Image (cartoon, rainbow, N blue to C red; front, side, top):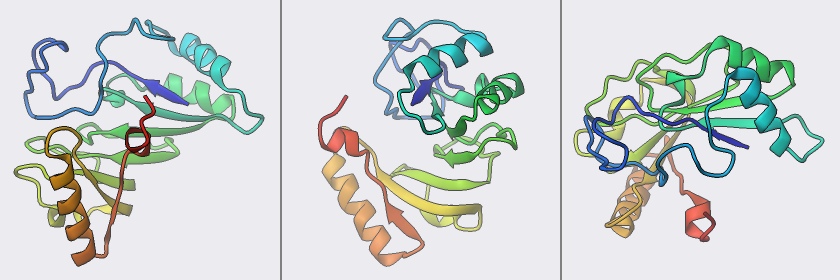
Length: 185
């Protein structure tokens, strides 16, 4: 299940006008907290709301994303999820250090932002970004390195560039947002 946190430390101005301080794209196509299951929660309220959506007998798999989830993810919330046997993952821009007890860390760096989380399970670089060369991340401590074409105008060109780079640099693998490819919102 996805737990999507609002707010991002790389955006300035209002969410509605998408004026960026350090990021010139965002793949999050929502504004506000009033959508399905939206609202403001304390740690226990968020835990209860998330677990109410989980329909499997398997341990809950929670993907914390945003905005920037590490602005709000704290020890109390992580402890509450772990107490309910949840596997907790985070998708972060890497500008804030992740809590050590997070089960899986995905970092998606942005041009112009200082990356403080230089280790984790996967680095997923939205590509191409002016000012970011995939080679600059190869010394970071990640188990997997992915290039993901930036969505939007020019997507086919971005996809071709990602494929070309991955073929020439086998450390990198292609990542696509499958839900967008097959039309699921």
